Length: 201
Image 1: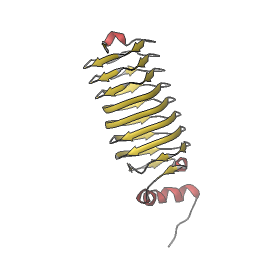
Image 2 (image 1 turned 30 degrees about the vertical axis):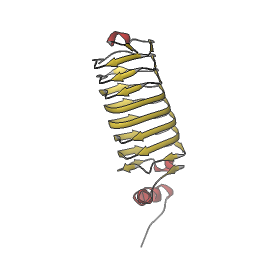
Image 3 (image 1 turned 90 degrees about the horizontal axis):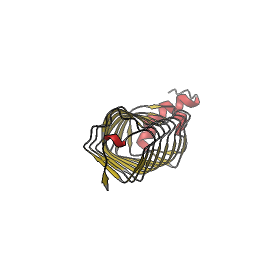
Image 4 (image 1 turned 180 degrees about the vertical axis):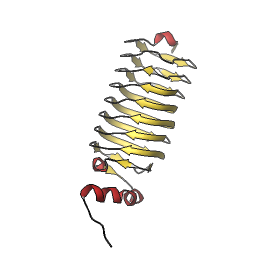
């Protein structure tokens, strides 16, 4: 694997088999870039622009960013491990066979995205925004989720039992998801309000 540097990140770059390690990549414009079988490790990605980028068969480990912009991007067969990101803005993106393990993301914005096989494991999530998204085969394992927004989302074969949910917006969008009994008790007031139930003793 070849060693990459900051200047390799540029609009429409074709990055094949490069390893970026311990680099300051802040503010780089990688709009439309393609990462194929790349490794990005211990890099500062604050304010990097990944608009329409494609991240394929790659591993991103211990990266950090206050804001990472990735609207309309494509993530496939990729692992994000032990990342620390304030806001990952990936609305309108496509995620296929992606694993996110460990670390913390304060705001994971997947609004209007298409997700197929996403596994979240051991991650601390502030806000997970799946509003207006089409989500298939999402598995959440041992994750803290401060707020989940499922407004007008379409969920298929999604397992949320491993999520410690503090708040849920758009509870009607949870149709098709699998939850635990304890989660159902917590969601009961929201579900009752959603369908217009009047609960009286």
